[in-house]
Length: 481
Ligand code: TXE
Image 1 (cartoon, rainbow, N blue to C red):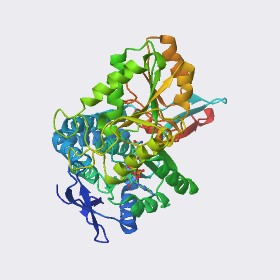
Image 2: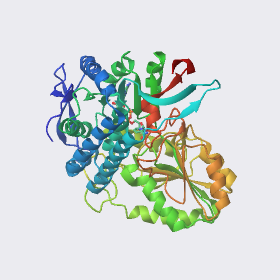
Image 3: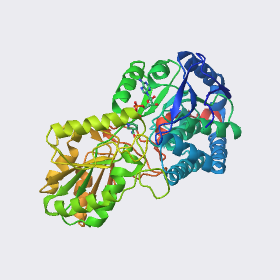
């Protein structure tokens, strides 16, 4: 992989301080390339570049901006193998999974491009005669797009396409763990003829460049995907200057299995939701809640399926490494903490030596209290906990016993149980007889409590994040024929 520079004002430039950091392959632990390690000077340069084209980009019609998004998407389609390879290499994903994510990122591009010929508003009549009102979406200005590493090309396009479509000029700060994915996206934007300065990429460590980007008075919107602790810091800093903030944060998602469920189906979805992407999904199932009558039978099915999971990044493997050493260390210490609180590690629990990279064994934990830190904290790895309940009420109370509220799933043959759970569980997404993950580009996504701040990204709902409504009142007088 070639060294990665910043993309500012349509040019590839090194960090002004001349520093770089290593882009590491989590599967092997090897350095892939060096990356521009930016500081506040680079952030200022990106802001100046964005400002220089803000008016001209805003002046484009929604159709023109949508068509530019389609040209970029076509470019992604033409280079999708290359994109997927970069995603796979720097995030430790199996190539087919990286390609699936790339395809979803492309679908997001086509979906938002289509909004160019929709972008619907409303009209309404005033109480007085000869006064008509129409609503139009208007751009916000400069958007700071700060993203995490778990699904890198999806995280790029979930923000870049709607932000650009709505008429904003954008500065993206990719995760330091997956810099190459945003870089190839910028290359494709450049090749598609996106005007210089409309989309900029500032590479670097969150602590070095994040605060400067978030606190800059020129930045009108901060859209962030990452941990709730970082999100809270961003919300405070940007909130103090009344900037618009959209936070897509973590989850501690519950998958409930009732005593009338199809246990083979439930076990299949437990494995997929808990361990695919090495559990690095905000929508991962990290709490499995089973009715006591089927607990042992379900447990056996899950444990035997876990034994067949293959770690690695080759075709046919099931899960790769976690993204970095720090995350792996966090998980291992969380497991030690759970054991200290009396939990049983029924499978896994250690670093896997199957490959030199940051591999965590798929882990199942039992006999842990709902209040234990491992029941409450998002670990973002292939670790899930199994709980026993006697009733649907108890399952719902346990599912809601979390500071997060992103997704939830229930397995049951009962329509009433599925509707009762869907109504009462405090999350943004509910799935019946499936996994806790799996939304699509045309569906809004987001959660309650520490999972978000009320916005929904993806779907047409994303336009509400990246634009504001204007109400235009037209008063016409009969005297002025
Ligand atoms: O996210 P971080 P990380 C959760 C998950 C994970 C935890 C940490 O629980 O264990 O977050 O993961 C940038 N100002 N999720 O380290 O630290 C940083 O450089 C501005 C759930 O990946 O939040 C990166 O680009 N920016 C989530 C981005 O923020 C700052 C997906 C995310 O980093 C910053 C990922 C600062 N002060 C993690 N500090 C989901 N919803 O899926 C860091 N950053």
